[in-house]
Amino acid sequence: MTLTLGQTLRVQRQRLGKPIRTMAPEVGIGYSRLGQIELGRVRPQPAVLERLAPAYEIAYETLMLLAGYPTKPDAIIELPEFIRQAARVLSSEDWEPLRSAVAQLVAEKTTAQEQP
Image (tube, rainbow, N blue to C red; front, side, top):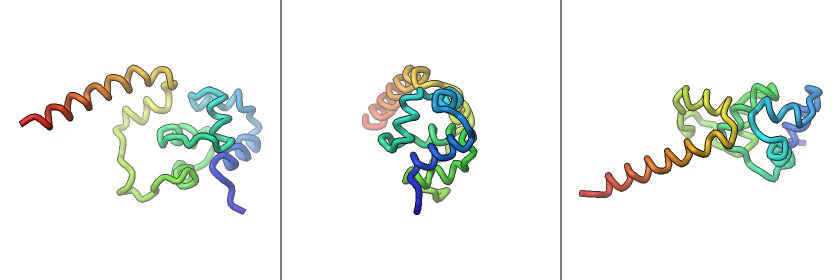
């Protein structure tokens, strides 16, 4: 029987002897959100899976596969190291101003490219 991503995470967390309220701060997300992931109600983004992998002691590639993301190297966009580092330490709230700034930059670049 193959376990889902959420089931795999829950079993492994329990094997590690960590309550969800202890594990959540280690991966930089709220325990409620982590619970949603473990219950299979939420599909985490690759950046979240990257933070989950070391905490759960599961290979990132395995988590990507279980989450249904492409695992071929050419199908995954390689992120700059500073983004990967930020993904490991910033909370969801920390990302919001960055998300807004990036969205604005993308809009500006898209508009500039569309103009003759």
